[in-house]
Length: 489
Ligand SMILES: [Zn+2]
Picture 1 (tube, rainbow, N blue to C red):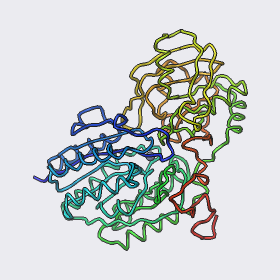
Picture 2 (tube, rainbow, N blue to C red):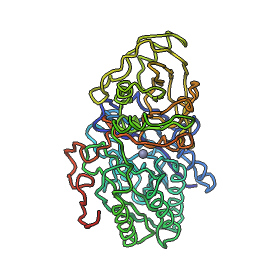
Picture 3 (cartoon, rainbow, N blue to C red):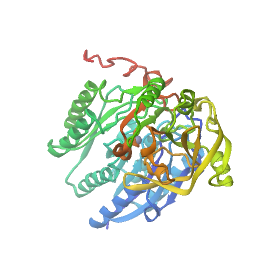
């Protein structure tokens, strides 16, 4: 009976983040990730386990390590996790290795963590073992990664609502390779673009649908992926790339990657959201009539899902300066405030200093006079795709006509439940401000009067043309209007 090895390592490193991603930041499972509550990494291992059962493969499950995006992983922490994962592979002697990775992890001494991991896995397993990985589209797709793996398949949707489907797609390519009915070859095409590309709106929606159609209808094409790239990392490979897996033919892989790459590049001025500055966003809130459908505004510069602290105060200060009321904010990562509120209890009135603690990119703290503790929740969870993720303890503070949700486990906002579970009725609010870039959109769209992306300052600033790269050449859009020189805008 052939053996399938499954494992995962999933974090995204913001090289501008003030928060190290140490061992304590990882949720670790040593071979039992699929028998615990699933996260978006272990959920993929569970998919592979199910599919392997149907194919008569024996499964050896290894390390599954997941951390919220943050700053660099200390070298010793990464090397220990990597070596544990590789030990599992060495012991399993598998015919197929499937890894759930992110593709944008950085450790001190390693600016291509996944390239390092895949190369070592290849060396260990030999050339005849199928080595495949899923990646988040917010990855740096490097030649090392592509060179070491047989197949890399990326989620297509942003918000990432297709993670389990992506795992299944990779498994299908792996099993065909194992059975000798396919021989995957990969090719990439550099789009020379750095931005963010939500897929729920046109024209990205149509682009993703076209990638799926090509997988279904184009002879010889096994998989089409777009690496969006993760802008907040000062590495040589940061940026968007197309990736195509063809069956046997490098020519087909290359031609298809270039076809889709050029098509994506031609859409560059339409595929990224229109970001409002802080002033314009406040004007939109002031003009919104309220009612049952609040405006939902993304505080994009302070997205914990991209490695930011989650304690930036720019939007609260702006709302207070204008005397705006009935705005809900979620979620400030401020464990000290949570601890004080939990000690005081529901109903307490406190003078509270909130946020602004992690550096200049967090802004100044907000002093809230006579803030009322409206509700406290413990060990709360929020939905993201097929899984429920922990969000720690949370409190609802009311002050100056604003409603502020504060928690003690740093995470972006995915789900209105982070407010509604505390009793806050979003229908009573003129606006809801969430710390996220786009993942919130899947579950907030049904309750939103409109969704607005705000270009706030911070660790995950969306002013992509101004990111102070030192290791990436500056020949990319939007720093240049037309870096490929196609002549079209
Ligand atoms: Zn992502």
